[in-house]
Length: 194
Image (cartoon, rainbow, N blue to C red):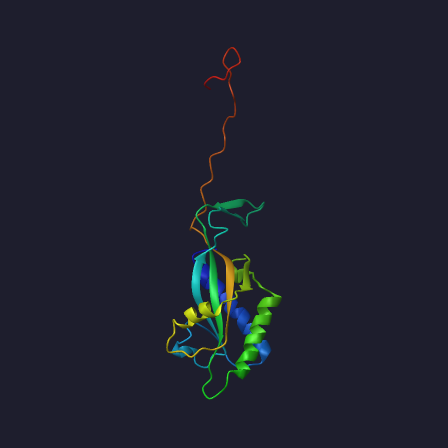
């Protein structure tokens, strides 16, 4: 992916949550942003990116992709950064209404991501980003909610989207082809300088 990888992944996840929201028949939208943002009022679900971390198992590997040429060629990115994106999905708020109908929307969102946990297609540059439920302890969820001291706690679940690749603008330069491959031996059978 490009430098837009975080944005693209967030947009693809938002679209999936909107599909779940439509299926739930709960009116409203998916708001992307902080839980205490005044613009989130009236949203059925809130999607908040609360942590971005390097993917430990992929961090020191070069990234190899097939390009669109015919026949496909392998493109190598040596300085790509694989990320794990941690999202909080929270039920929204509706003035004068309980959280109950919004729990239905959250249930549909969880089902949507459980049945098809991969974000694919043009939205994520035809790559695969796997989305999985991230269990949070009471302490961890409290730390996230402490970021918003004015907001009342609402039912939330956490998900991690991985890997999300930030690639350099250009792939690694190809090495020059080997022009001649030979070994010369000195008299007496020992190798000598070429």
